[in-house]
Figure 1 (cartoon, one colour):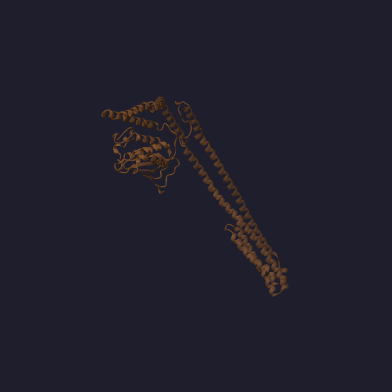
Figure 2 (cartoon, one colour):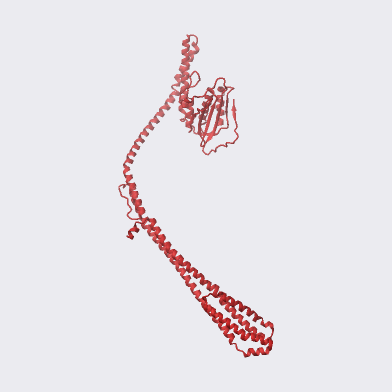
Length: 533
């Protein structure tokens, strides 16, 4: 039951269980290592900060007692007070070292404490029975009596004192040895803990690698092999994960559902491919037909510019000859008919020329270059100066440089400014204003005049070829100017429209793409007006 339950665990659950188990084991080892390290520190402290200083203090205490005994003998021989200096220094060192040893003792150091008490008792006995009586005899009975007292006395008390100090030193050495042995054992225990932790981590890594190989790597390779076979054309092959984690089993099921969906739609894709191929064939035939039609149009343009123009020029020439030769010699109606013929021939020539110009836009090209519109408008102003008259005003601020064909852009402004001058209000000096503003990645241009304007209902009609809003005898022209303007703008990648919101005159907007890399102009830069009358 437990084995079946584990087999249903996800890969994440299995890795989480492994990490949790490993974490618990390492945590237990870490706690044990912490206690071992604390004990190791205490044992090192006993060796370095208690046992060794106590042993040094015991040696110093032994030296202090020897100095006291030497000082007493010297004083008894010479009677000089300076011979008591070793005795007095020994007393001071004795008190200091006894106090140091007592400070290092712990409650559990009962043996060393008993040894120290015995040393202090024997020191007191030696002082009471040897050193102090000798000092008193020197002062009361003289040197000979003191020397006789020392020679008559025994060194047994001092020997017992030194033997007691040696026993205390031996017990201190035993304490130091135990602490050093315990510190060594704890150090070995810590090394063993580290080795065990490293071994556990290595085993966990090996187990994790085996787990990933069993539940991830091999199942993925098997699944990839099945997918490659399906991708190779075996669309009916069933995809499944025979072993692996539940996630991969689910992934294999999802992939198989996708295979089934692809297989079911494959026939539709093939049908669609056939339809696309058929459409491509139709498009190719239409493209060939369009190419042939363009060749026919080019041939027509050639014929219109040469073959049709020649007889038309002859008709116009002979009509003009008739008009000059027989004007006034026939009746008024005949003169009128001749005038109609001359006018019709001239209008036909203008229509053919305008149609040729319209058809050539975008076909005959020299490529785009940087075009300075200030220079273009200067040329436009010069061309239109005879038509503008002395009272007209054409003005523009500094304009940008754009990419395009300079002849076409010149034609564009000639038509726009020319229309503004043509459709002027009677007795009102014409004013034409050309401006530009940056709008993101393009330039917006506006040509504004104070003429008769254009009604809103004709906003789209004015850009249609050969569309006139006025009678032929009211204004000259063929009605193709704004159609040419629209085609030039669209050829340059822009758009054009009529601003129907103005109250006086006409306002036409169009856009041209800004050159790549051109910075937007500073709005606070000073404008330099170029005004011409």
